[in-house]
Image (cartoon, rainbow, N blue to C red; front, top):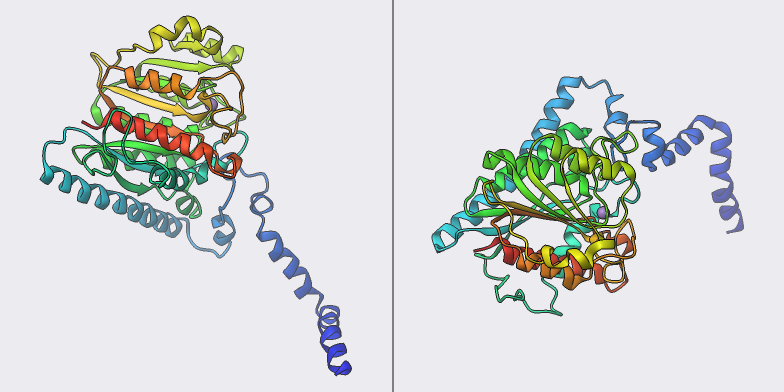
Length: 378
Ligand SMILES: [Mn+2]
């Protein structure tokens, strides 16, 4: 017995001694499990799973890789398109619906300058929307379990597409195409679940292109997200509104809840004519912000809610904790009293990896989604 044990213990060591190459390869393979070491100094936007560069070493032609990527993207868009078609057909058959919110998840976190947890938010938000601890009525009495009020077309499979080596230019295009696919189906209107804030750029671009003109944007956030470029990444979550304004996708941009703004943030705000409302003057601005009328003479209103617009006391599960923010009731007052045709919206930057164990911020994000649903659907 002791002899067998000794052999079993010693044989692998003897094997490694005789075949050192096998040993070093097994170390290399362990290294593969760590995406960062695999990527080396790759460009921004290539963090997390991204194995295609290693696979390319297998001498597959660029054309073949691109063909494969296109097939994956087509399949992804097809699933969203078919779900949107089915649900819109049902709504049209039910009749009497002018506009209906439809959830579209965009689980993207790699354009965040800090933590990437928002990539995991959409399923947590859905879970909280349907959590049994509350009922399915919005505050003003709309029923979320009525498909005429809310449907769901699923997620853009961001990580699955990136895992095929698709870079951000094309990925952003896929997000835009997904949003347009939903808008194709009357009466669906996209209510997008982020994701970090970089997704607002391809979403707003799609909304504006699809409607054929600019929208007015109500943007609730601790940060203006309007850097020309952040840490070398033009798609950064800190630059999305610079891209939106450059593209001419917004006529008015109102930023509310600001309390972490640099000189560049203010300069860029002036450059693009942004109406920036800072928290330090909120008590003075409150009446105006709780009685907004937007979207007249343009294609409608887009609402972008960064969960960190809220004071961290209300929503600790965010990447950038910034004290001195809005209360949840402040946000609801602004949204519920907003006059205008809300054509699409997003809720972004909820980071489940920083949430409390009982998922408090997930409930907060879900209630934002519920009340935005009430705003969109009619
Ligand atoms: Mn923010």
